[in-house]
Length: 416
Image 1: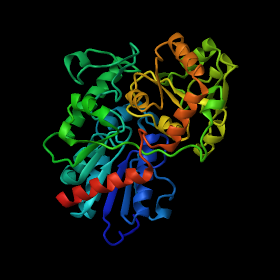
Image 2 (image 1 turned 135 degrees about the horizontal axis):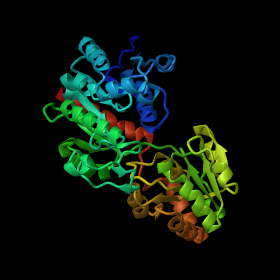
Image 3 (image 1 turned 60 degrees about the vertical axis):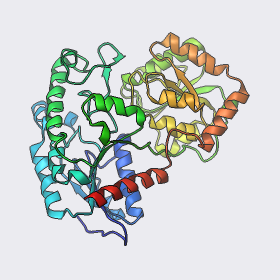
Image 4 (image 1 turned 90 degrees about the vertical axis):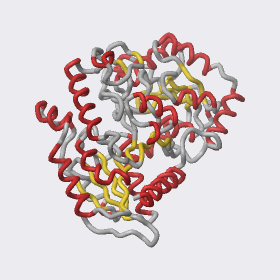
């Protein structure tokens, strides 16, 4: 890794993540933090489990160490089973890097680990646990399937992870055999990320994550909520009060509820635009010709598809701990209609930034779409103006997010 020292008064931060190329929100945030920390004068190292980003981080003065691994889904089955449970070789490489370069003022921040790095990364970090933060972008620290959702029954799970009830329930989206593999991985995680080490803390996305994480064995004293950062899709407020079309932004995997939304829009007789790749459900455009499907849209181009939209709909079937597109759309001035199984639904409703909706069936969601379509223009305008002003929002600006992280890092470095 190439050297890039800190500015006076700044320290060194080592960020660890499965990937160095953003394909989801967690990696995007890990990369954002690396770039913002470097811009603020910190020395930054980015250790990824994959084959690297082709030099993009290094070109920005960020040390990059790619360990050369592959995502579990890209490996042969036997290899994926073994390395996913505990990738000893990768853990040893991380441990060696830490031993060779650690200082008393170096802080470590682990983001994603479940797709490549495995529980072995926690053992590698144990010697520096007092200066290590673990970011809970999901519930994999607590729940074997990472989301507290019973995919077989299609309902939110309230079981205690690894209890008899949990072990006897086939909740996995693939098979019960895969559930048992996840259970074995969870046990390996609990051994590696146990209470015996003085971890600096677990960073959650909001106070609503505390109970589910603690239910799965994460000590509540370690959990510190830090809201996710979000930037608006647009530079000018979306005039939601003058629009009729609803929109969806994101992936079309089945748990996201996109098919249910399309059916609901048909039943309610409202216009809908789906912004995102439909590769995971390629039949959707033919099944719903009245829906406007944009296909894949670059992040920077999403805003131009929102000018004629009345509200964003987030119809997820499972309790995602955050909804980044909801925050980005809200900051653009769009009211948010968010599934009531998501923790953010209460935040959205309490702050009067949109409505909690029932996405368990197309009929129920259609009723909520009709309700939103009938909202007076003055009420929509009020929501839109307050959302765009972001005076009472459920996300942080990137700058405020970085301020919070820097304060945590300073505390850990001081304790170390």
